[in-house]
Length: 171
Image 1 (cartoon, helix red, strand yellow):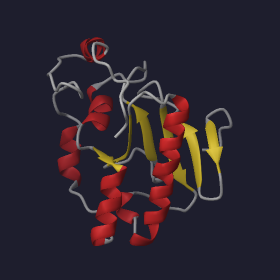
Image 2: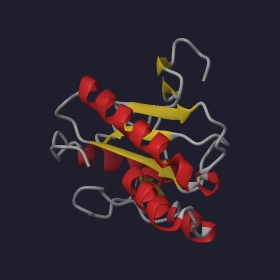
Image 3: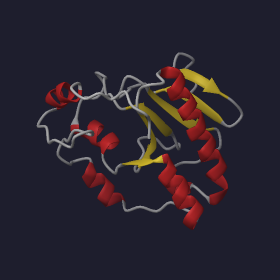
């Protein structure tokens, strides 16, 4: 988080960095300065912070490539113990995307949209989910995130997704 080469933006509430191992052409992490270990630690009082994080993510995506499609969300089981919002372009054009786990962590329900987390907090005041269900998603068959076609290997999947136009509005 303190690597100046990776840091993109920082203010009193958040720090934005480039992902050290990006899984797409554009892949950023937005982390609150408030100590929030994971999704289960979120409370209703964090809603404004999450909205701010997503707003900053959308601004960052627009300034990076206004026509490229992005998603904004969280891994249901994070890779590090500090809450972080992924801002990731949907081209998945990166040498760091090497295996099924990488792919499925961004293209299945394992990746939870920011808006869904916020809605859940607004509705019930906390985030709950079954870890075993999400862990199994990482082992799912490889499928194109656009047309849902099953593809056998990561190299074949990368070739396949280049056929799609992923420069559309973000979600």
